[in-house]
Image (cartoon, rainbow, N blue to C red; front, side):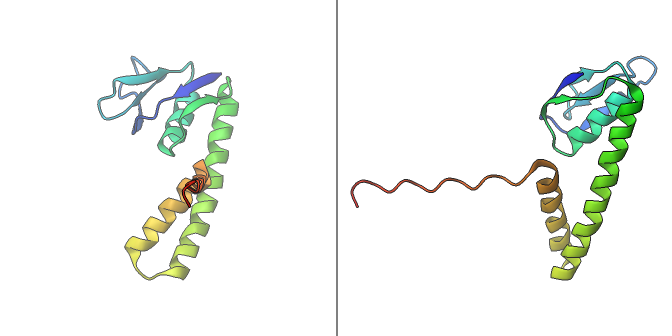
Amino acid sequence: MLVDIPEDRPAVLSPSPMFDPGTVYFGKSRKTHVDCPSHAQTELIVRLANLGVSGKVTLPADTGPCFKLLDRVNVRLNKALARFRELAESRTRDGRVREQLVEVLERWFVLGREAAKPPMPASEDQ
């Protein structure tokens, strides 16, 4: 199943599991939403979106593989976060700086590091 995850944050599950259990709402106003055929897909979309993933993403169509993928994402991220905390603690005693380091490392781990900006071309006058 191909789903387009909006850039709006936060992503939350429907507050009404009885009437719209397969809906994920995006943004503070909750105007943007995605409807899914299964609860497993909604949970996976919420997790990916709140990690910063957006755009077109292919998800498993069946419930079992969705929950398995969600579990694998969580396990991998938890291992990485534990390592990032160790690294941050070994570099500074300032708790605020440690949390900032962990946040940056997590973002790079999930989304990749931004490409360096290309150097400015030299002007022809020089």
